[in-house]
Length: 276
Image (tube, rainbow, N blue to C red; front, top):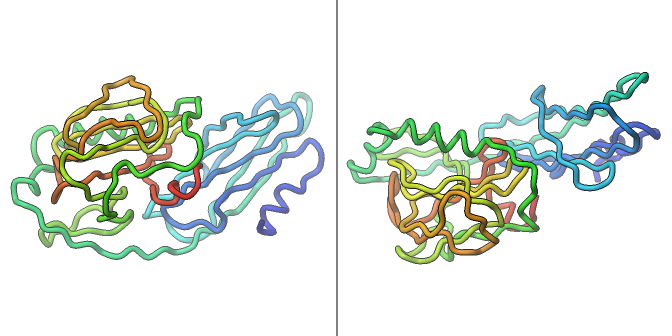
């Protein structure tokens, strides 16, 4: 444990404990922020770089928030501020600075058939992106995941998170997930337990399943073939949700697995080793 974490926890009675993991962090990390409050409060809040984060109770006097760092997050400190107000007493604050280290991302060059490459500028593409982003930014209070996540398909990791890409020698957006290459028709499964927030087919994403794991944590599975779930279905970890396809803006048969924290795209791979 770093000195900064020890300092945040070694607080007088009635104050707030504050810690974040991992620390130091890197772009793409999912930060798990814990607030410990040993006394009554009228209001308890947490802000990260000025943005208010929802807090969810995990036990008596203990609360958790999730903060997503994207591939575009700059190196340098992220300031966390926990605050509580108490009747007839002065408000209390605890401040923690989490260092964010630089992380290099290797460029990736893709070649795609012209009819595929034109999909992002085609009809319905922008509306689909807006709809998926809105779904991925929803917060529901119940934690549905338990422990580490699992890959959504058996296959080769073919596209890492965060890489800046070109498509047919034209600049394209950085990769907001992890690609798993697998044969067409093989099973795609839920990375963790949750509720299906969106199931459908869209121009760029192709066959799509978005799973709400709770507390602002979502998985998005793209380029699927046949879907076996619908909106509102409850799924367990590694239960089937679809078949591998290669639909939409895709170079071949694979599953794109994106993880979103309050709408921010984080690296899925660390979740395979440890849950949030």
